[in-house]
Amino acid sequence: MASLKDLKNRIASVKATQKITKAMKMVAAAKLRRAQDAAEASRPYAERMGTVLGNLAAGFEGRDDAPKLMTGTGQDQIHLLLVCTAERGLCGGFNSSIARLAREHADRLLSEGKTIKIVTVGKKGHDALKRGYGQYIVENIELRGLKSVEFSDTKHIGDLVMEMFQEEKYDICTLFYAQFQSVISQVPTARQLIPAQFEAKDEAQDGSTEDALYEYEPGEQEILETLLPRNVAIQIYSAILENGASEQGARMAAMDSATRNAGEMIDKLTTTYNRQRQAQITTELIEIIAGAEAL
Amino acid sequence: MAEAFQFELVSPERLLLSAKVTDVTVPGSEGEFGVGAGHSPLLSTMRPGVVKALSEDGSRHEYFVRGGFADVSVSGMTVLAEQAIPMADLNAGYIAQQIQDASEDVADAKDEDARQAARLVLSRLQELQAAIKAS
Image 1 (cartoon, chains in turn brown, blue):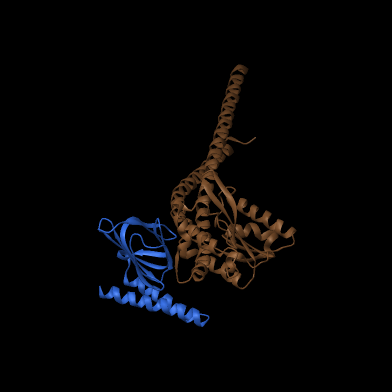
Image 2 (cartoon, one colour):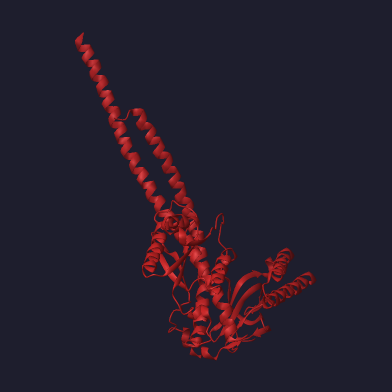
C-alpha cells in the first residue's frame, strides 16, 4: 500500500499534468478560432475557381485537345498519394486517422497490382507511414514554425506535384486531409486531384446558361492550361487550411478529455489519501487507549 | 450616374472586396481593359498590375495584383488574384523585392518561352515601380 507521502506526491504530479493539459486546451481553442477563420476565408476563392473551371471544362468535354491535367494520362498504373497531416502530436486521433485512410487506400491499390508513390506533408504523417510504407515515400515536406499558412507557403507543394506530373512520374494523384466539420468531428477525406474532377454544374447560378457565349482572353485552351495547375495549388492550400482547423479542433477535444480525466484521478486519489489518513489516526487512538488501559 | 454591378476581389487567403461598383479597370494579359455594367461575359488572365474599382458611392479602390484572372459574367464580376495587396499598403521595398524575384525567374528560366514570360513580368513590375516613384 502506498504511504501517505507517496499519495501526496502522486496528487501533486497529476495536478501539474492537469495544468498543462488545461493550458494546451486554451491555446488550441485560441488557435482554432484563427485557423477556422482562415479556412473559411479561403473558401470563396476555391469555390469561384471551381465554378469557372467547371464552365470551362464542360466546353472541352470529349475533345482530343483537352489538357492532360483534365483527362489524365489515359492510364491508372501509378498513383501518387499526397498525405497532409500535422506537425505536432497530442491531438487525439487526428494524425492517425488520416494515416489510416491513406494506408487503406495504399493497400487497396497495391492489392490491385498498382504502383504507389507517397508524398507526405507534415512530420507526423511521415512518421506514421515510414514504417511499412517507407519505400514508397518519395518526398516529405514540412511546414514547421509557420504561424499562419499563406498561399505562397504551399505553392511549392503544388509546383512539386505538377512537376512530377509533367515528368510522367504518376498517373493519378489523390490528396488526403481531414475536413473540418466541428470541434468534435473532423472527417478524414480523400480527394482526387489529378485528373481534375469537377462537380456536376447543373446548378449554374441564376440560370445564366449563356455562359457558352464567354469571350476568352487569350484563348480558351491557354486559360484552361494556366488555370488547371493553379487549381491544384489552390486545392492543396485549402486542404492544408482545413487540416489546420481540424488539428486544433482535435487537440482541443483531446486536451479537454485529458483535463477531465486528470480531475477524476485527483478526486480518486484524494479520497484514498483521506481514508488512509483517517485509518492512521484511528490506529494511533487505539494504541493510546490500549496503553492507558494497560496501566 | 452609370449603372452599378457586383464586383468581388478574392485572393486565396480572403475576400478583399465585395461591393457595388460602376467601373473597374483590370490589367489583362492582352492589355488593360475597363468593365462597366452589362459587359459581355469575358474570362481573361491577368498580368501583374493594378486593379482599380470605382464603387457606387464614389470611393476608389486600388489593389496591386499578381497573377490570376478576371471573370465577367451576367451576374457580376470576380477577380481571382493569386496575390492582392491594397495600394495603400504597398511600398517601394515590396516592389523591389518582387523585381528581384522576377529577375531570378528570368535567370532560372528553362526555355525561351519561360524566359520571355518572366521578362514580361519583370518589365511590368519595373513600370509599376516607376509609377509609384512618380506619385
